[in-house]
Length: 491
Image 1: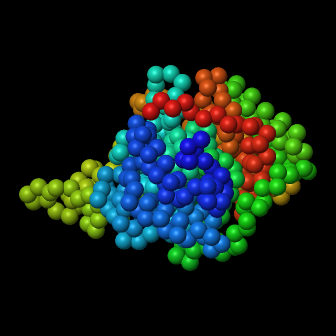
Image 2: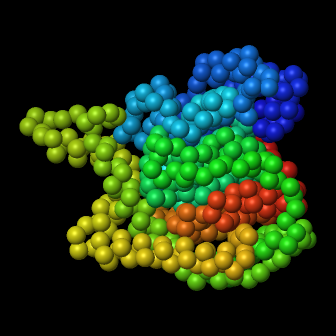
């Protein structure tokens, strides 16, 4: 096994035991990144920074070393990194190199992590297939025919990099499923924590009441280790919760006897592929065999989740993206004779934003406009409250976690949905958006392969602030499923 193929837990032990140096581990990843160019996962490589951090980690090795000392990670391009391009995969931020570090990356560096570079993503995190990026499409390392497949989105570069062993783990962000859907498409683990568990400071905003950063890893144990380093209260983020961060790794007892697992009847969607239905049934059996009690539950407002999400998220996006005007940083359009400030704004935004971002900004501006605010935005907020109440009632009735499919299909081909109705693409988020609307933690775990040989995942949804319990349920599911398949190397 090459060093870059290790999990965080395995690498941590090898580093601590002196079997491996952080420099050797980092070099293995950098070599894999060079070979992985066809995947277009890494878009800003930072080998000099990585090797400097690796040498520092080797010098620091010992009792005082951090939880991630010497562990090479990929960072989604949405996280601001001091002196390193942070473009959110958008031309409007071309050339932007922040003078500050996001709270998440600061915490990772304090824990001793090594940054290999910045990862591809959908522009401003708006997309489910990584096809809206100014860097071009990221490509799924899984390949079963002559097509190139999507790694999912918006954290597509993160998912592809972890699945292809270009890094040991990566950061992602999840506004409506952008960690969990790509994790399912690439056969890795991805957790979206409770809203407020991880600081949003220094992460380029999409929809501020929905965005949450989380880990994308090769195993549930790695997710627990990485989340422990990312989480915590941050006074710079007013939505950050001032509550203790438990030892997530210690919570992985593997014992879920007597726990109640809810199965929401509303997630049995019309036209759901038989393979997804069978996988879900298998997940129920695996958790029951581990001693959990499986109970049917109702989340009656589920059918309104997608429409509510696609009102609220674009509304917040149109507000957040108003700051990109060509005045202070990023791209500025070339102006003609007689052009004024308004022309500059309009030309800059037309050139800088891609089609999907423009579409969502226009939708968001429309639903917030006078005369439509109550009809759309306020109504969507009321629906959101009802969706949250559905979950609250299920948890109040004693449910410990909820099991659902992660995605309505396995990975599809790049370009296959490009000309389709945008709503067809939005349906990829049908099982995941409820979790963001309710602010809950959710995790995607790889459980099997479909008939074509592509990975499929199941989603577990947890109680607010109970990532420890959620990770333990996921650990049991992962162990029972025994998913060890890796993509065949074609790149």
